[in-house]
Each structure stands twice: as structure tokens, then as C-alpha cells.
Image 1: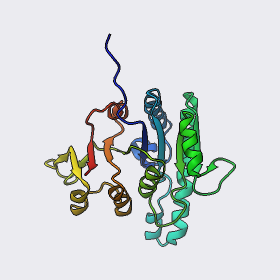
Image 2: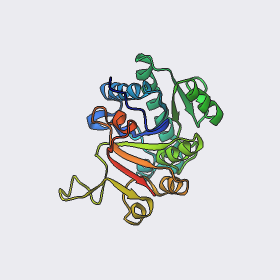
Image 3: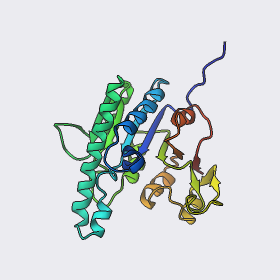
Image 4: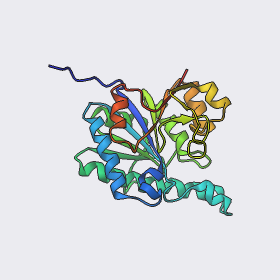
Length: 241
């Protein structure tokens, strides 16, 4: 009898962009895209892996783009944080329809729909087998949800940050513009920083580098990619020492 593969990671942080929840257009919330995400997350949870998710809000509102159009940056960033809460609730709904117990923890107080972020509470939810979604960013303007992902991953002791994208890893150039762009299977933090590769923003990346938190950038739109990574397959690009 063939023995089932064991998960390589026990606790993961999955970073989802807001655009991913928007489906092909990257705008608003696409129910089909959200259901597909929930299905992949459920499959990984069945492997007894503890899952933490950080969602962006770019499908609804992005604070930086608002400031470029004349809006106050702080106001725009808080609006973006509220957008992440909307996305977190949409994902929670899809997961719980699949019988996956889920909790949303927000860095912004919004007690009617989400619990406040408390590190020990988050860890306790994980230990009870619940999927935890972090919303509201860090609760502070001028910080991206990439930074939130790096921060929370270190706070809750995740084994890896899995950054879900629409491309199959990190390239030395934009693969959509340059068909000869080279994809890295693995790259070290210093090289990624030196080449200004768009892995995460510099604050998020520095947090991961300083705390030796590995990052895997992969294409989440490909079915079962998340599960394949958890089982140890080399999918996407690994950023590590």
C-alpha cells in the first residue's frame, strides 16, 4: 500500500491579493474565484496543516492610488484596510459553506463582524483547527498587506509565507512584456533586493530577510498548486538564504 505524503509545512501564511478575489478582471468580488480559492484551502486543511491568510483590498480600493488622485494618503490607506475586511468576510463565507471553520481577526476594531487581532487568540484558533484570516492590514497607514503578511507570519511562527500571484514565480523581467524573461526556481534575499525584483515591498521583504522567513511565490490560479507546495513539490520561486 502506497504511503501518503506528509506535509512539508505545519503552519503556513497564505498571502492573497485583493485582485485575486476579483477573478479575471481583478475588480470587485468574483464568487467563482473565491469558491475556487476556498476549495484549495480546504484541501490543504485536510492535511492537518494550520492555515493563516492575509488578504489585500486592491480589488475594491487601494490607498496609494487614491493618494495619486489627490486623496489624503492616510484616509486612503484606512479605506483600503476596510476593503480587506470586506474581502476577508467574503472568503470566510466561502470557506464555511465548505464546512471549514474560519475566524476573521481584524487589526481595526470592528467587533460586529470580526474579532480583534490578538496573537494568542490567533494561535489558539489554529490549534483548534480553524482557518484564521487576518484583515485590516497592520491597523496603520503607510503599510501594505505584504508587510502585514511578513509581520503576522513572524508573530504566529509560520514555517513559510506563500505569496499567491497570477504568474508562476519570480522573473528577472516582466514575462508579459519580455518573452525571454528568466524565471528563478530559487533566489536569495540579497539578490532579490539588489535586483529590485517585485517580490514584496521593501519593508515586508526586509522583515522576512531579517527573520529568515522563507517566501514562495507561485501561481494560485493553477489547480492544486497550493497542495503540491505543501507536499514538498518545487512550485514557483523560493526566496531564502
